[in-house]
Length: 311
Ligand code: SF4
Ligand code: SF4
Image (spheres, rainbow, N blue to C red):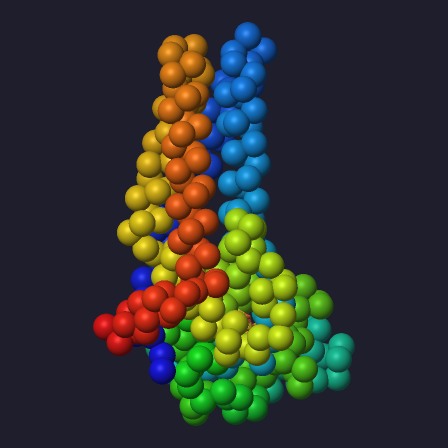
């Protein structure tokens, strides 16, 4: 059984980035206020929070996916979806292939820009991808001529971080650059297209962020196959998109903003610090409970998960 389409974690992520932006924007004022005799306690809280939130966001953006799913995201329905290559990267890729005694035409192909699907055209910065060949506007893309999809469907197919189903279907084939060990041949040569460098699916990203938050460890994942890891990631997504987490994050965000303001203006420091600590305690306790329910569910939590999948 598979959960229906879910929202992504972008809502939660945007609250975090706005908090990081707020702290970064006020960073130099926070430092100079401390030098001017501002509260040492508030300074430490704001500084530590800045570091913590930076690490959480970095965990989301870690580039190398270490999860063994046979590279599902490197499979495409032939002729329908592919990865476009930045125009400036095409020549180094071709040279790399020739150095490896491989034929570039087996790996990449030129396609008319006008034949690209509308969503690709609107998402790609044209100036980086399109090149002219005679009168035509062209773009390079990878060929999907490798092995057939290793997994048919179900729990072994991760979702994108936006919560969408991955583009694969049972007829999909591997990108020509995916080798027999399910590794990208362009990875070591540092020639991966931007779309591949930037892509993370929930099976990896959600685990990585949850580990950074301290709710998941390698021990929790030990012995789990990819399908089980993916199911856990899908359930963790429920926590990330829940109204409860959104409410907690929003309240916590507001209390950080109030603390920053009070600290910078040196106003009501004692009562603001007291309120902040109470808010933080509530935030941490409830957030931990929320994630625990997913990672280590009791019988009622199982039932709730089952019902949410059927909905
Ligand atoms: S990003 Fe996701 S789909 Fe792609 S290889 Fe990693 S785990 Fe598999
Ligand atoms: S270029 Fe590499 S990372 Fe990108 S789809 Fe192909 S095998 Fe995967």
